[in-house]
Each structure stands twice: as structure tokens, then as C-alpha cells.
Image (cartoon, one colour):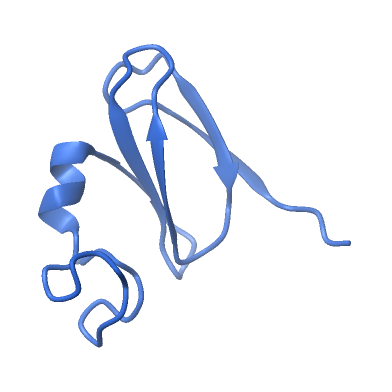
Length: 83
């Protein structure tokens, strides 16, 4: 059985909460910080970059054509639009 790579990142809102999540390219994780109780989104791009968004930032970057479902040619399954 393959071991699952895990990545850790701090909360972008308060910096206190540390999140561990599966490092799988093309996935978006919705998490709630145990310290500040804010919702954050962590997206692992297909090329392996880790992007951390507040709820407001995620709403701005979410693909408008498919509403973040990842089922359109514009975002190519990424669920978000990045430059």
C-alpha cells in the first residue's frame, strides 16, 4: 500500500492553527481553523503548488463557469482560476 503524502500549513487568518492534509494534486480542501474558527480553502494545483485562501479569496478565484465543480474546459478540473 502506498503511503499518503501529508502537507502542513498555518491558518492564513490567524497563523495559529496548523492544518495537515493529503497532498494530492488537483484537490481543494475546505477546513475550519481550530483557533479562530474561520473557514479556509487549501488548493493543490496540478503542478503541485499549494494555494491557501480565506473564504473571501476563494470566492474571488472560484471558477465562475462551473461554480467550482471542476467540470468545464475553462478551469480544466482545477475548480479555481489562477494566473
